[in-house]
Image 1 (cartoon, rainbow, N blue to C red):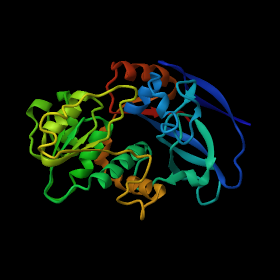
Image 2: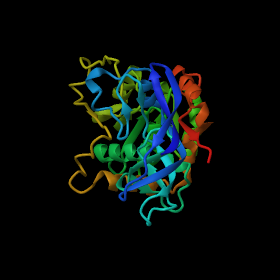
Image 3: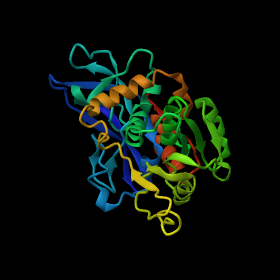
Image 4: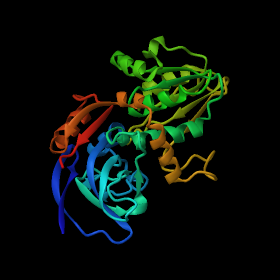
Length: 324
């Protein structure tokens, strides 16, 4: 058996690198050598801190997760590597998969998606995030000329803002409490505002700040009969909202969006694999490089995860680099 190394959350707030043994791939499987993996900060820091509610253990399982919540658990889903063994048409191809942070791994060939020409391996780690944003926009269905706000300039919110800005005639503003995120908005070609300066009268507000304050502000920004699309996941936290004020008289809507199912608006015509392929095609635009703000070696990942969870590291997307 070949040896590989994997990142495990041993207990709440403590990660470690473990050696693992790899079996030889079957005829319909591939062995992939990882080039880069990405940390999906919001979800992965909640998992790292042991804050997945017991009621969500099944729903929050990653496709190739090992172990169970709260831990020990091997978790993650943004992985780009090179196929070293497998079917001829995939040999040597750079591929994306929903695999955790591990130096090499064996999965079914159907579980990897080739990265298109023109998309760098490093940028391709964003495929899962772009896929989440695609699903959200299928859910939200913004219309020509809409006024749209995205609250929360993290990895997901910034990706949504970059995509919705492509709609003709749409006014987009990216809103965050951290004014340093303005340079990300500039790189993506969208307007930036801190919450108190944001423009209201919005047809659609997409909320991705994972904070009660952000969701409350999202409701404030809506026009009559406007919609908040809630993309945040709060883990084990409760949220309080002012639904007794003008919520009913203004006929406001709050609806959820989650990538675990294809949006009902496209479910009869789109598959999971087709949605992921679309996300990778969209990553041909180098504007998305602005979302990869920090990088660390695989050996440094346990320390980097502690820094992300504590807030000492404020990366949008942390790119994990693997040695050959």
